[in-house]
Amino acid sequence: MPEGDAIRRLASTLNELFVGGTVSASSPQGRFSASAKQLDGKLIQCVRVHGKHMFIGFVSPEVPDAWPQDWMHIHLGLYGWWRFNGDETVVDEGYGVAHRVAPVPKGEWDGHSETRWGEGYGQAEAGSWEPPAPVGQVRFRMFNDHAVADLVGPNRCELIDDEERQVAEAKLGPDPLEDGARDDKESAKRFASVAHSKKRNIGEIVMDQSIIAGVGNIYRADALFLAGISPYRKGANISKKRLKDLWVLICDLMNRGLAAGRLETMDPDEAPNPPIEGDEEASRWYVYHRTGRPCLRCGTPIREALMQNRRLFWCPSCQR
Image (cartoon, rainbow, N blue to C red; front, side, top):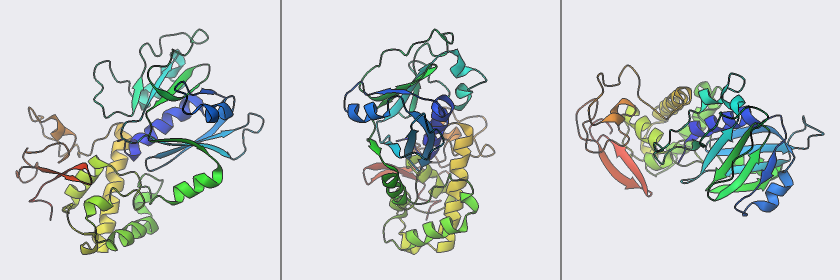
């Protein structure tokens, strides 16, 4: 499932390609037809992200500066992704999209990417490009004169009003990728207070989007490793100071991944040099996906288990 930084990269791409202009909208699959018809011909005013949730705001072209009352609420879930295509302007300096979301080479998609680029993107000249036919079960399609975006397999895709958007965002915990979140004492205090009040495992708590928004499996694994906290330690048994430190650490890790353009937690100064043969993950992650391999700090084999039906990775020696 894409984590918060991946959703923000998607939002940046959508912003580059569509915000400020009108779009043609449809639902090739048919499951979103009525809502897509309402959005067809409208202008995208903004794209908001909170954690793993995306909100695309639409307005009438006659009032482009109005605050949106129509919002597409999208949550990709485990299987959702976007496919993009477009003409030569999509990859030039004007849009810079290719620098934000690198295309996935044919045959190299690993099942974890939230974005794919269609074959032949960026090869057609502006003015001669037409959107390719939709492939697969496309829930929602929008396009303009230069680009098309197809949404496939989302967990949530619904048209809501602004009041409903506010309610949806209010249900989510603080987002570590919000501007200033790292130094926001109130956000850190809110996370620490709620986490400390729980008798649940911290490994469950940091994946609870109502407590902290945007954290997924990879950031959970490596943030708890770097904090030296066992994923099985109860929130109530962790001091609020330590939980505030965990908040800062998560902010740092997620911003590193956002800046890198891919989900990686490894401090470049700690990355194995040369890379460990047969352990490519060790150059990107500390414990995630490294079951049975030596901990990079103490040598103890990394363990794996299921927690709430999600794979959990940790070092039993470094994390207490």
